[in-house]
Amino acid sequence: MDLELLMAGITIFVLAIFVGFEIITKIPPTLHTPLMSGSNAISGITLVGALLSAGAQQTPVTTTLGLLAVIFATINVVGGFLVTNRMLEMFKQKSPS
Amino acid sequence: MTQVLINLGYLVAAVFFIVGLKGLTHPRTAVRGNALGACGMLLAVVITLTHHGIVGFEVILAGLVVGAAIGVVLAVKIEMTSMPELVALFNGFGGIASVLVAGAALLEHTLHGGAPSAQITVATAASGLIGAVTFWGSLVAFGKLKGLLNEKAMLFTGQQVLNAALLVLALACGAGVVMTSIDSVTVIGHAFPVGEILHTNSANIFLYGLLVLAASLLGVLLVMPVGGADMPVVVALLNSYSGIAAAATGFVLSNNVLIITGSLVGASGLILTQIMCKAMNRSLTNVLFGVLAPSGDSATADEVYAGRVKAASPEEVALLFDAARRVVIVPGYGLAVSQAQHSLANLASLLEERGTEVEYAVHPVAGRMPGHMNVLLAEADVPYESLKDMDEINPYIDQADVALIIGANDVVNPLARTDPSSPIAGMPIIDVDKAKTVVIIKRSLSPGFAGIPNPLFAADNALMLFGDGKKMVLGILAALKNV
View 1 (cartoon, chains in turn red, cyan):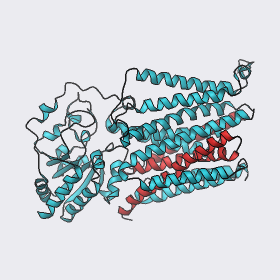
View 2 (tube, each protein chain N blue to C red; view 1 turned 30 degrees about the vertical axis):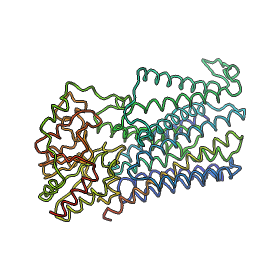
View 3 (cartoon, one colour; view 1 turned 60 degrees about the vertical axis):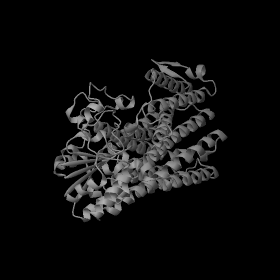
View 4 (cartoon, rainbow over the protein chains, first blue to last red; view 1 turned 180 degrees about the vertical axis):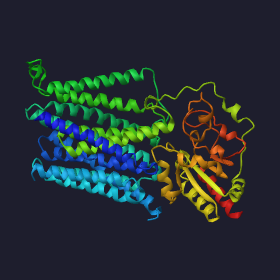
């Protein structure tokens, strides 16, 4: 059972890497900075794990670790999406629609 | 909510991320793509909060509020020129979050008596290792970009031996975490009670701590030897690491949305790293170990420049622009340093009003992160269409009447084409030397990152405009208005 779960995980991992390669190679160099900050923001998905640790409240230690993780991941997510948006708005204004 | 529904929600979030990233392929759809990604994240967070394992919301709320407040302040306050620092910092935060989550998960499993499976412990070790390297590496990158640390490559003897030793130590600790967490190992039909022998209460926690410590030191040492102009590669690579750390955390928690998202980001960072390396004609190992190809017996600065460099005044350059029909502007890191992007854009629009065609040629590694120059120019309202890639502009750069170089050096050094013994030999460059006249705005004749003189500055068709980038651009602008 464990092994099946692991295999499923690895399958997803490998396929997602290919999806990543396919999409990212199509992004023009002009947008590389927003791509980095944007992909950075979604790598803050660790927040999901952080929430589980912080909310389970098993022991004071795990809760503290979880709290710190929530803070760091939230900075990453909120800051990342906002700053990406700020950059992209600058690009958008100048493009003929 | 049941686990099935939660997983379905995660799947939807993952789709949002993928479609969102796809939106980034064009400036017109990019804002929407980014917003889609943010929606996906919101969805993932809300769904997670319905998980039955979550019993208290105070801590979560406190963490979210504090994190969001810091994130908003950072994102709103940051200058566009400082974007590389911010991205490096955010990368690091993603890394440390993975370290903490994996550590907490390991602790929970251990305290609950049940032996965590090999998948969990292996993934925990990976998460701790990659996450800690990302965090500390990013902090060093941040320090270097911000000027808090020496931007030059810092090398000492035995550095690579030490790095290797640290990596081995970290891996050994990782193996220790796995071994101390399992009950028994079955080898050829015999069950060995490893757990009884090794399992001294919290040995695995201690080993995890040691692993994180070793990986932290490794992260610092890995980025220290990387010099300023190589930063785009490192920032991209750390971006990739932060993704892989998130994916590893996904394996710890058996959480598919983490695995999918982490691998997307990992792949994206890797591609950018590859593009950056190619644009410098250097291998990743060269960049990471601070190695610049040894320069052969190349000419000294005096031999190259002696008596041949022509200095000009802004007024003379304005006269050149007055007669020019096509102008190509090549920005470099110096543009960001002198914050000249707005003045430059003003100059360009004045030229366009006078009927001159203006284009920008952007080298892939100009600046301190991939796409750095494009962001600065976009901030200054430069139309997306006038930004040209190196490969796009090179074939017709000889039609330019004036090429204006501001704050760039190595990326326009013709030695890359002509001198096979040069440290930058083979690096693709913008062929500005083929333009009718080349104007270079630069403080002095000091060499760029590669440390070699640039014969372009002494070329017959080149004029040097010595001074601060912004002041010189404003000078040309004022003079051009009076022509």
